Amino acid sequence: MAVTTSKLLWCTIRFKEKEGNWWVKENSDPKHYEPDGLGILDPFQFPWILDMMDPLREYGLSNEVLEAAFVPFQPQEIDKDKDQTVRLVRVAEHILDSEEQLFALPNVKDGDKGAYADFLEHIMRLRVKLINDTIKLEQKLTVEDVDEQLSELRNQAMIEGRDIHPFEEIIDILEFVPVGHEVPSDDDDDDKPARPQGAAEDIADLPDVEEVDKDMEKNLRWDDEDEPAEPGASEEGGESEGGGKASGKSGRRR
Image (cartoon, rainbow, N blue to C red; front, side):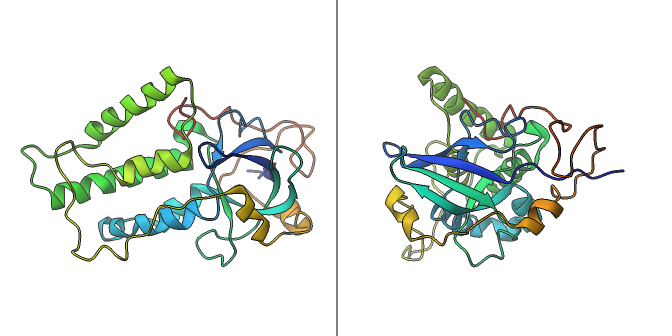
């Protein structure tokens, strides 16, 4: 079975100062990564999320699931005169092993059946295990209970006509606690990471890359997914590629 080259090689992002988050403006594969409402984790948010997931490791947090859920990008060009727009290029690095400060784009290529959706379900299940293990509840909490309550947040966002950023989406799960309860914590909370306060001007201090890595552009394959190459497709992936628009609860909640 032939393997197609990923077309997701670059994206441009802009900073919304009011909410303090970065959102995708354009990208090289809009068919699978619809820019409208697609947020991206900045180099301050992603490490914070990793720290917040530490308690889940003893419950089976999978680095493989985590790695597959995000596509790493690095700043290439900053246009401060154009709506604080930054051009990012994809890097061929394992996001968990890299020492660089990277942006992390949710892998929403396959929507509800994709890697990012799997990641959200994975950490939700682990959060439920942690809560049931540390809080005495009259009835065991279930994943369905949590998803139902988080659905109320999604519905409220829809009513307000706003998109939910992946940072908000993830911490809603990592900080979930049943109403009227709290998760016991250590007496000393000094080691608990402070929530990041990302700002557009901080990006200027990040390392830039001059151009897209040519070897990566030619050889980068989308994770371990194989799909037949369509007729007329070029070496870079052509104009046609299998798959559909990302949707559902894969981080594209409106």
